Image 1 (cartoon, rainbow, N blue to C red):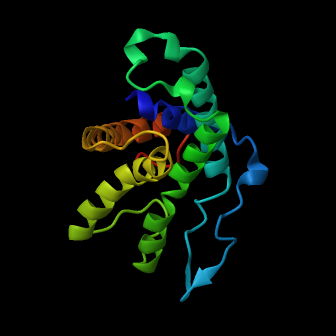
Image 2: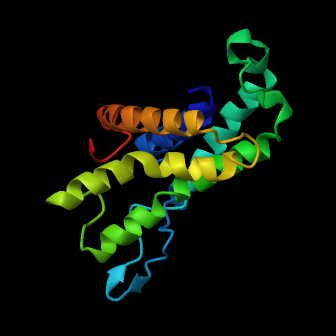
Length: 181
């Protein structure tokens, strides 16, 4: 859980900005409105504000962990104080948020709109992918400095799959997200 805390900071930063429409100039679609075979690459909801704010929030929590929390004995399992600086936390958050893009790309190819869910057997696949894509993107960067043991990976995926729906619902309830899924 401790390793995933920066992602929570990133989600909070992004959610607050979505709620109050701060930094609206960053709400530019990552795909720039471009299409492939008549369909948007990612859709209008995947904007630059997401990766940039998740990077900023992740960097803030990474800094807190490196500067303060590494002194708490309960968090001694991973000594973030000896890991790369805040820039690394920002990079991990940025890549984690970009981890949603392959999912969005595939959904657009299948005609599933932003915020919509798949039907039938694909619904289960996309539900799981939605819960885990950010954690997988995060580990793509984190693995460079923290050994991705089977236990760490499995725990991260379970925590991600368990927390993501609850955080999504909470974000919707607080007005930070357009939907509860």
